[in-house]
Image (cartoon, rainbow, N blue to C red; front, side, top):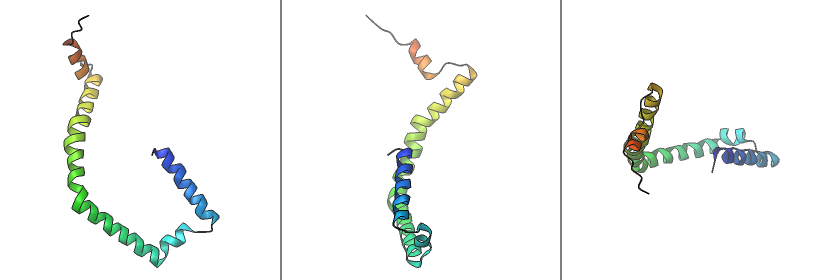
Length: 98
């Protein structure tokens, strides 16, 4: 789902709640609402700490940053400085046989 789709869905949910005279503020500030928020917050933290932190950190640091972000930044700096990028360097070695 795109960000725009999410915003449209959120607006629709708010309109539906307003149609049924449900105040989000009242629900969130109620004792039951606060208890539910704390329960979800604790469960989310537990889920992150026990199951997700290690694989997500690996994917972010060892896959995304090393393979995609760092080369992207390096090539942008080369473009800024007027030096050849990785694609320019690879193109010099490319041989096309017809």
